[in-house]
Figure 1 (cartoon, rainbow, N blue to C red):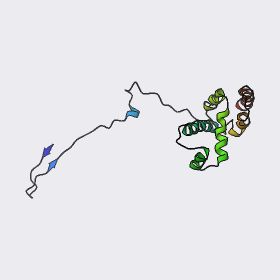
Figure 2: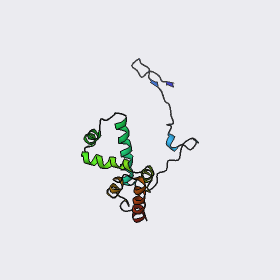
Figure 3: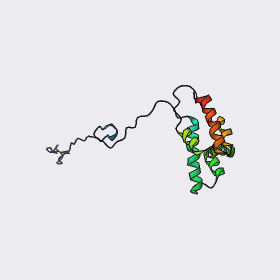
Figure 4: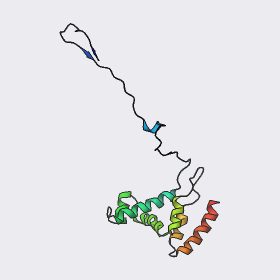
Amino acid sequence: MKNTASDGTGLSRLEISFSFKPKNRRKSDNHPHEVDRTIEPGNLPRISKLMALAIRFDGLVRRGEVRDYADLARLGYVTRARITQIMNLLNLAPDIQEEILFLPRTVKGRDRLREKEVRPIAAVPHWSRQRKMWAKLTAERMS
């Protein structure tokens, strides 16, 4: 702090200087508890995003945060039929749902697997049949 002499008006001027170093935690290398958050190249397949969305929407309905699928359709500006298509992914066997959630990223070109191709599998009520259909589909599309 500096107190300078009067500038002729009878008032004195006070000058204060300080310096600071901003803390940028994202670039700091001395935080051993931080997790490496590198992002894989490519995009998540759309079917993976839709599967996650179906799980999220189901939770909203179960907790009563939304009344029903019609409310979801209104809030999402989509048709009730589209919400039903998305929610039908929950009819898949749990292991198929998990595989869909963890499909490899699409690095180049279009997604290898589309939701439209999975709809017939979700319509089958028997998980063992679903698994056979899923194995055939992924063998064709993912290789």
